[in-house]
Length: 240
Image 1 (tube, rainbow, N blue to C red):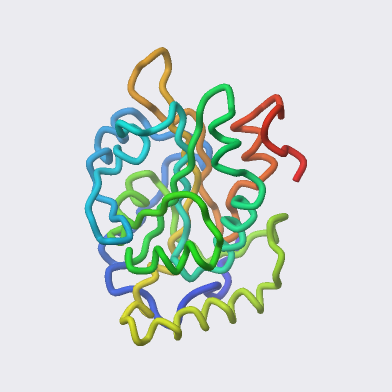
Image 2 (image 1 turned 180 degrees about the vertical axis):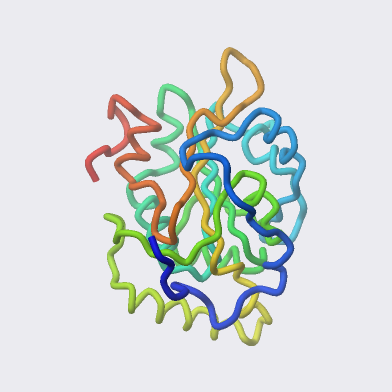
């Protein structure tokens, strides 16, 4: 598909966005990263809202982590498309429901912008899940997530028009002029994806399922994601 003009982007891009570049991709969107790749990235740094550093592995295999952890990589922190997805996810799948699954599960969000925008993202989306930041985008690059401005089809989780989403994205950026974060939401060409970490018979957690976005509106649909986590539909709402 030919690429379209940039969408859901803040007025300018983050100065840290050039630190990692996505090269030509070898993995299919649903092909899990290898154990070797996970060993490579497990100690990459992610930042919490206070700017404190954490190894990436602590998000899915820390002492307080659940048996399964779904790590969702979003686009930049002003991206209206991703905000629509996280808002829909937060309404449909609750943290307590995830803990009630036969395999206790939790969700963690990772964005590619400045950690100073994490509180903003919580407020805009109503997200009940912890959020971290990878402003270097090293995780995105080495987990083979792509950079693209291609729109793709309008997803089921959209409630607003693209015109409204783009307008709101720009407004969010201008609201952060005084904080110095207007240009630090992240690279507007960076796409994300979903990675499910779980262990097999007590082994170290590996990615057992994943989906890399192929365009800016390509997060996994909520019913499909619920089916991955709860194939029998006993807890999660598969038909939302």
